Length: 215
Image (cartoon, rainbow, N blue to C red; front, side, top):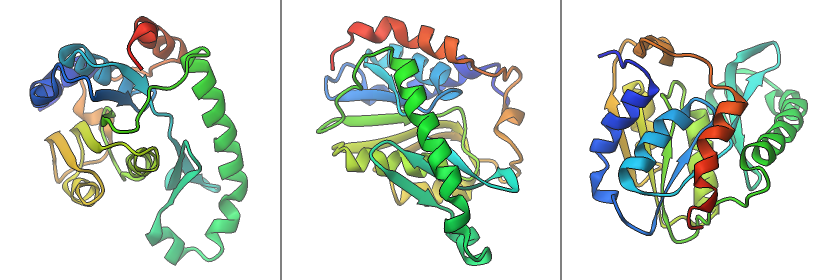
């Protein structure tokens, strides 16, 4: 199945998350930028507060599209163990990448929230949302960050991801809700009829109505 757009995928996911509707201990956290349109639909359906969880991929220096890991708030760093075994000295090579992405993470957090503090995670059920998952490094970092922030429960909600990635994430999260798990998986974009880039301005606009949501 190909989704018309991220909004349709979000509505379909929300139908599988109805048990969390109306609960005051539930928050919805989007991985920006592509996760925001999906998460917005889920938060609206569940009447839950919405926020972002900024996580940055760590690309291999000579092949940036290859994920060597990811970083998340709270000093969380997740590295690809397979690549660590294959590439000698990878950790040292990644030091400037980590520094650069840490600065970008901080910039985006400040930009997206426009001086609003992040939602309180401690003791809450955090539903973390993206528009799809490939390697899972970014989502893994997000889950570890939420554990470090003392979320009572972490639920991953995504429209599409390969089964081996979902299997690995199931061991990390309390629950994983994924609409499609195709064995033939090349890119998240192949599962959407419309898959435009989501801009920083769009992220800010989607979060703006949530400014007065309970923290």
